[in-house]
Amino acid sequence: MCLKEAGCSVCTVERQPFMDKPCDWEAGKKHRCTSAMLRHLRVAVMEMCEQADLNQINLLEAQGDHVSEREYWAQRRGQRRLDHANAKLAAEGQQPTQTVYQTELDKLRKQIYACIKNELRDNFLRKLRLLSIAFHSIHDKNCSIAA
Image (cartoon, rainbow, N blue to C red; front, side):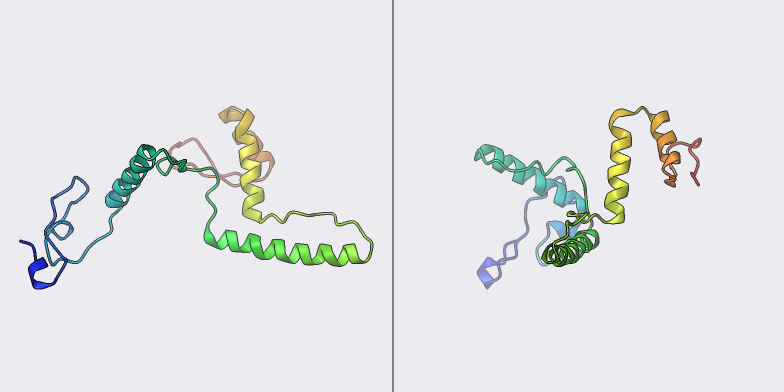
């Protein structure tokens, strides 16, 4: 039943595979945004972009470094402070030693990626221990925490 005649644009819609509860397709129910629906929408957007021959980044695959919003803003504030300090040094005629600010998480992430890049699993774990990086694997019972 469509309520458009009564001036309302809420209608019962055809049930889709990502819809798992009646509130997803029945008229008058509160809409829920589920992870299945978001996955479906990402796939639909990617299909539309491919059909229109747009150069859209792939929304379906994980992209490189996922930085939290908190870390992003910490990096921005740190870079702003570093730029300000470097400007003072340049005004005094000194050469700045560091031009790019890195958060602790970014340093750790880069160390881990450097270990992963060219090493097998055993060498990777050994290098993590040498760097004093604590780790714990929920998938491997033999994996321990490095001190």
